[in-house]
Amino acid sequence: MSTTHLTSTRAVHLASRPHGAPTEDNFRIEEITLPELADGQILVANEVMSVDPYMRGRMNDVKSYVPPFQVGQPLDGGAVGTVIASRSEGIPEGRHVVHQLGWREHAVLDASDARVIDVDIAPTSAYLGVLGMTGFTAYAGLTRAAEMKAGDAVFVSGAAGAVGSMVGQLAGLLGATRVIGSAGTDAKVARLRDLGFDAAFNYHDGPVSDLLGQVAPDGIDVYYDNVGGDHLEAAINHLNTDGRVAMCGAISQYNSVEPPCAPRNLGLAIGKRLTLRGFVIAKYAEEVRPEFQQKMAQWLANDEIHWDETYRDGLDAAPKAFIDMLEGANTGKMLVRL
Ligand code: NDP
Image 1 (cartoon, rainbow, N blue to C red):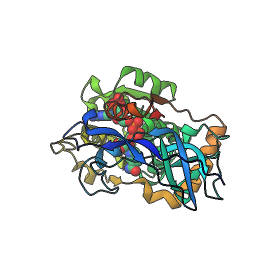
Image 2 (spheres, helix red, strand yellow; image 1 turned 30 degrees about the vertical axis):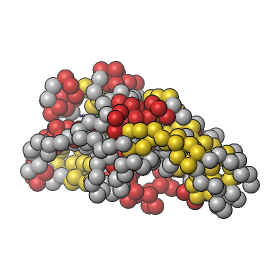
Image 3 (cartoon, helix red, strand yellow; image 1 turned 90 degrees about the vertical axis):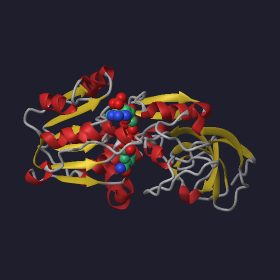
Image 4 (tube, rainbow, N blue to C red; image 1 turned 135 degrees about the horizontal axis):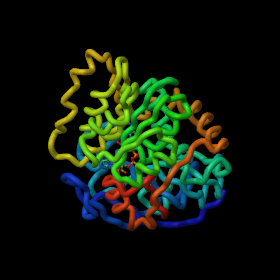
């Protein structure tokens, strides 16, 4: 056991709650005290941290499935790093771990709140993406929430993002007859074709329902919804009888101060016998994670899954990285190198 002593670190705090889109003024970087290691604790030098859309909801003072961030307190979220001091027999110094005390350069935490990661399978950052919450959300959302089966035609929105780009590739691996994606730039649409999507469109090019209709002449069986609003309305228009929707996210509404105006066609769900199932990934943690880890490790070993990462450098860049991710600056997973 080792006990390198570090007494403080820098952390991003919530300075104020946003009204609409967050700005850099909503964040403040401050020094925080690091407690001395207690028995069973580790000190981690964070190397990469995740900025995720769900954190936007946590900036509001509303009760949700994750508690809100507190004004004046550090933010938290997924991070990977190296253990630089340890009073845990289970996780000695030198190990790479993934944990939930991101948004700071160093973290002291109970070893039981960290998971050792295997860098022989994939680089550390992958444990925040393809092998982490991102990949798991894609897999569980597709196989459980949407109950996707071979032969389905699958449409996913936010398709060039972290979760969406996994969903499209997984749908192909799981036997989809047609995989369609939407994204916000032509470069992202081109990337989706490289990733094996059968069709893709830029949702800025016209009404989403018209654009989807052009690439899904036979309709869709599954819609994996990362966006909500007009995307969900478009999918409901084009879903076939007994179609299924995995309601994963509604990023088009996260910064809204007005109630959403779509979908206006929910009544179609009755005659088409649609299933719309919202989910949060924690629901599937116990039941689905072992299956996911085993299958994803195999797909990675076979080079059947590809993932993109967009990086920003340094803790000072983290607030802007988060703001930019919400505005679509990322292809694949938005990450901050610390
Ligand atoms: P992404 O990597 O997809 O990044 C967010 C993307 O959203 C941006 O790159 C942007 O891409 C797109 N976007 C932003 N505003 C809009 C808009 N108005 N209309 C359409 N697209 C928009 O993030 P993640 O992969 O991490 O998350 C994707 C979704 O999954 C989110 O909704 C998130 O909340 C949800 N999620 C849900 C979980 C759950 O347990 N239910 C767990 C994890 C994620 P573009 O350039 O294409 O506009």
